[in-house]
Each structure stands twice: as structure tokens, then as C-alpha cells.
Length: 53
Image 1 (cartoon, helix red, strand yellow):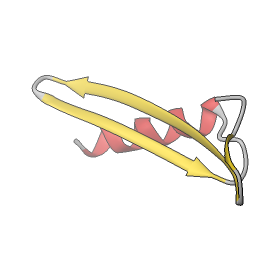
Image 2: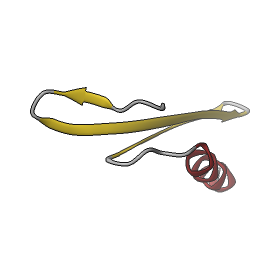
Image 3: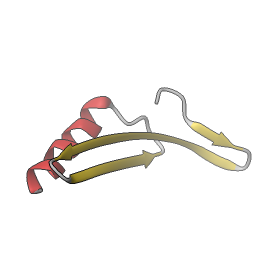
């Protein structure tokens, strides 16, 4: 997401998500933070989590 979610009285929040599956196991990863979340960051995290399955 290029634009942060904003709400009056709260700091802006950036988010990204990844979805993956292997056989009958599905994985959803959500990352939020005060700085933009890059595609590389979310993909690296998703890949590392898939290695654990």
C-alpha cells in the first residue's frame, strides 16, 4: 500500500499483506507500522514463514 491509513487524532499507519498456501495449509501475514512496508520486506517475511511449514 503506497498511502497510509489515516484517522483524525492518530498517526498514519502503513500496511502490507501476503497470502500463501502449500497443500492444505494456508498462511496469511499482515504487517503494519509507522513507515512504508516495502514489497521486499513482506515477501522476505512470507518466504521465511513458508520455510517453517
